[in-house]
Structure formats: C-alpha cells, structure tokens
Length: 229
Image (cartoon, rainbow, N blue to C red; front, side):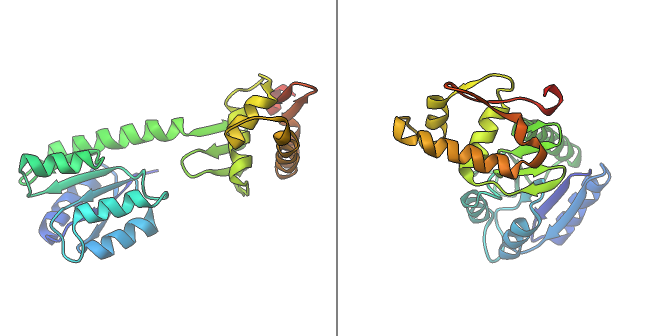
C-alpha cells in the first residue's frame, strides 16, 4: 500500500511542487496550509510521514511536533522539517526534539525524495520489529492493540503485556515469578493468583488460540504456536 505523506506548508506553490514530486514516486499526499488544521489532520489521518514547515500561521511547526509527541497515537509518526530557517541553532533544535530529518529551502526535489524514501524505509523496518505475530494472531507493540484473523482483539494492558512476552519466546516455558515481574514490576506469592486470573481471562479472549497458552504445572506458562499443537 502506498505511503501517505501529510505536508503542512503555508506556501501553496511550494506545497504543490513537493506534492507533485512525491506523487511521482507513487506516494499519496495531503496538503494543509495552517498549523492548527495541520495538527488536526495529523491526529485524524495518522499519516506515514509528516513534512513540517516551521513558520506557519496559527501554530508553528515546532509546536505541532511537540503536540504530536504528547499523544501516543502520533508520537511515533516520522517527521521531516522543511523550512527556510537555515541557522544551525534552528536545525539543532529540530533534531534535538527528535525529528527524523531537517531540510532547508531552497531544496533539491531529488534530494527531498531520497530523504523521504530513507525515512519511510527506516520507519517500515521499525514497524515490523514492533509486530509480534503467530499465525493469524498479531500484536502491535506500538499501539498495544491485537488482532485475531483481522478482527480487533480487546485486551487489557496486562493481558497484552503477558501475551506479547510469551509470544516473543515461543515454545519456552516462562517462570511464574518472571511473568509476575513483567506484569507487576515485582514478584511475590501474593501475585500468584492475579497472574492465573490474567491467563484465564486471556484464554477466553483468544478463542481457538486459547490452547496456545499452555501451563507447565509448578513452573509457569508457555506460548506454543498453533501449528505445533
């Protein structure tokens, strides 16, 4: 699926020029010319990449970026600053905030495309590392959401952490005390029943994948891939 790139740029000619060059690569683009509207679109669309000008009406690019970082659903969206502010201090501020790249105007469209491609490539590799899957069971560690056969899997945070930890260690029994530390930050006998309760509820939600979470009596729990059962 083509990457979706959102650009927040008040100069419409520059925005159209950038969009033209990005669309030639097969990427989808959305253009916004106001800072406040830009942040709203970022929160609504969750694009694969945001290209931000700094000097914007309503809300500047640095404010937008800080607001993105405050929300879990937008904090990990890759961002490239494209701005006329070329001073070293400006570049350092953008990069120190955590931006993926910083380009100044005027710019080469070819260089911009190459930088965008590199950012999307890194983001794609990172996203894969955040996915834990076994058969038709998929967990996204970035959003703490699970899916089973493409349908949402309603898990509590504790259930998600427990299942992800087990799935990342398939076929290996995990000690009860280690699992307690994963869930509660510490382990003692008072947490033993709570662990068992989480496992019981988790199995109910996993339907025919429930048998993948196996019990090693007196030791702990294990995730066995469905094809190995």
